[in-house]
Amino acid sequence: MKKSLKEKLRKIKMLILDVDGVMTDGRIIMDDKGRELKNFDVRDGHGIKLLQRYGISVAILTGRKSKVVEYRAKDLEITEVHQKAFNKEIILEKIFKKHRLPAEAVAYVGDDIVDIPVLRRVGFSAAAADAMEIVKKSANYVTKNRGGRGAVREICEMILQAQDLWPKVAERYEFDHKVKK
Image (cartoon, rainbow, N blue to C red):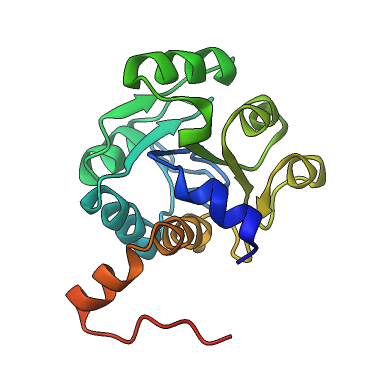
């Protein structure tokens, strides 16, 4: 990990996630009764739980409104959920104030043009591997994994590693935490 990225990640106290294209692969499945289905990656969810376990808050900030997102947030014990956010930057400012966080203490992961103002405003920004090119250019980091396919977990692990919390994770699960270079 580059030193400049590690320095940004060390300051993170909250991770904010877009949903469609970040927590999911961006596809929406609707059945013949109009019920919406989304695919979430279980390892992304575990990464979120790891962050929470070590004191890093997680929030959701999405432009769409969906019951599925409410259920997933409840399942992951994410209480800061903002749906139907047409101007994400306004909501971001409210989150900063509510949690008394400076921009440098917040990370955001997005994938679409509506995310660009937020990506430019936070201390650490990431775009999913399959994000729009303009979004990738606006982010500090582009994940190796696609949205809904490990992008969130990748960022969670990066934060934990940068904050020297990864050895504690390794100890809990009894694995060798040393990353081979």
